[in-house]
Image (cartoon, rainbow, N blue to C red; front, side):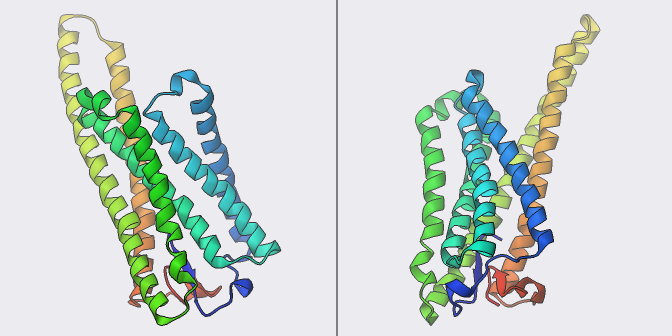
Length: 276
């Protein structure tokens, strides 16, 4: 999942964090290219289009920057460390996790912003001031940095104390960035879904009344269709996020607590959230 680790007894110079299989790098390369192009376009439009430079889009911009860096830097550094250089896997993991944590927390911030915008729409301007938006974005990156780099304090300790701290750290990260993320996003989506459903019912009632008294209002139908489409897209994203993280959390807890065996995960002497 988010924190990949390996056997602490191995030297960092003879350990490869990622496999050298061609199919693996082809798939990772395609995903990286899509992430760089897609998020690069988002960054470009928000930065250079004046009408998009609004406060609530700063969350989108921050998330796009995090995902852009994941697609670009983790792939390039992974290629270099796997085929060209001998890299310290501890620093490599820490760098990867920093960007992944930043992406997750920026997604939190954006979801909270949208939740406030829909649930408390009349108070949105007073609640989400420029100062609060900047603070939320800055905290997302700062917390991600601390959560990732604090791990270096014990990763270089090959003794029993370092391994014990690492086990509790992985569990805490799984709960915070995995379980809590899934619960929060699902809760926010369900809340938004019911609010949009109620708004759709009210709009339908009003539209029927207008159609009865006057002509059909095409603009209201268009707005309602766009709102429903946005809810469906958001639901698809949340569902994909939950499915992927649920699998990762399951594997992580199995490895942490040795509840099940995943020999294929350790083919390259590396496990997700565990030790081979």
